[in-house]
Length: 135
Image (cartoon, rainbow, N blue to C red; front, side, top):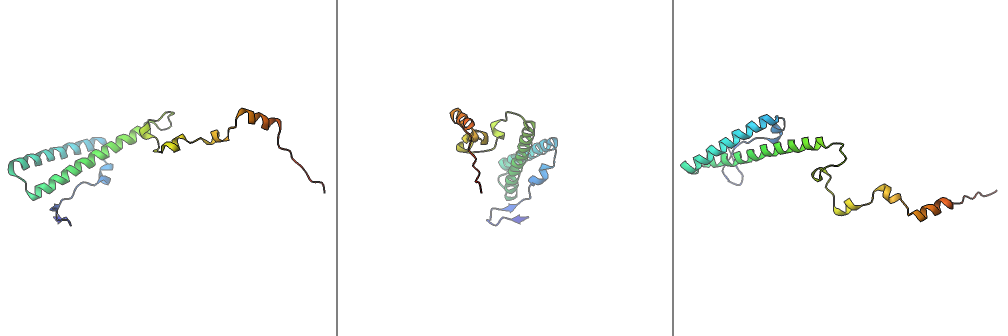
């Protein structure tokens, strides 16, 4: 068992997020249920027997593992939802690129090229004159 450099007690090995990403949704739900069960048993032990350093360390690791599993579950759900809206005309705001207000309100390239109708007519009626120099 290792000890933390800040002397917060023993460090217990927890789950790695990269290992959880490979699991299916069903396996993640089972893992979450197991971790919650373990957390519940640790809470009851803490209430009955009092705090023990090894159990306190395991308690912290278990809570972080639950958070990791929930994070992976939520990421997978968001990825599936994002894939469902791929190529759709209207995309929910949560899946749109994060931009500032000024960037969102900027003119598109097509809008920048447009001219007022009066200028457009003048441009068509009086095209630029081309001169050739006689040598």
